[in-house]
Image 1 (cartoon, helix red, strand yellow):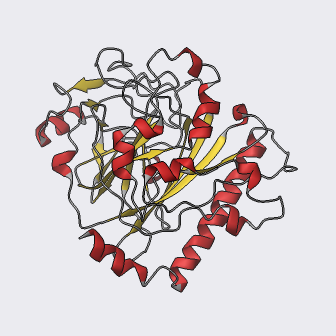
Image 2: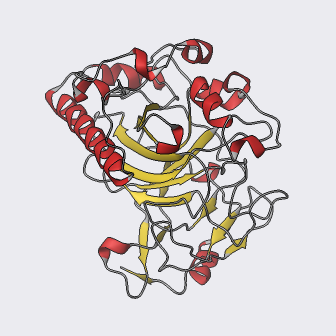
Length: 354
């Protein structure tokens, strides 16, 4: 299946629509970097600021061994088309485990920071159909990850943030270019796992809106078909630099290197690199990072049976874009338990459907 998919995609890799999509992506990421610098009062563009070079080796060890020092790749005159192109592959991305901390029903918002301390991180994630190499629009994307000390929100498991929290979690719908963007903080490691971000793509979901919200202020969603379950990783040198700062240094859980993470090893393929391209926005990590990746998805897939939630969000639908939502989540039994449509309707009773 994977071999056939890759062969089918090879013919469209350099087609005019794909090249135009890549140019739009480069322009978008360049403008995002400019806006982030302006917002944060960073006006310095005097030093080279480029992503790690594009990577396509099959083995995770080879990927991780490459030098990704951003200063060494390009000079300030390099075209944004080169700097921000990123992994332009349409390769079918390997599925990974949903993990024990997926929470369904999270808020649709771009800022998921919720006051968490850490290195600011802006994510730009583009989803591409592996059958057509075209962007996949109107697909719901869940993003979730641990905070700067390796703690997850939204679940009642020992050592985690609890049902009354939802930091570092959020949902967006892909735009016409198949893109979602989130503001968050760089995730830390935790026992058994290297630094990573979870993603879940869902097609044909029903968007649920608050009673007062407009179409532009969607609250959450239900149902749909899970088309991809993935995890995104980061350059080892970047992780080392981040982990040397506070509050990451206060994380008492045993550090796990990328090469020791079995899920990362299983996800990396000869056609797809699970490490995100990135750019430092300033001279210091405190100025923040812009990270991006292109994810190839088989939109005909159905992974619903592999995406059971550990809890379900039932919080304040009016809290968006990083505000303190004082949320509530309902436990759904042990991680991996399945819940019914009736449960969803009851817990989302405050929302109207449109």
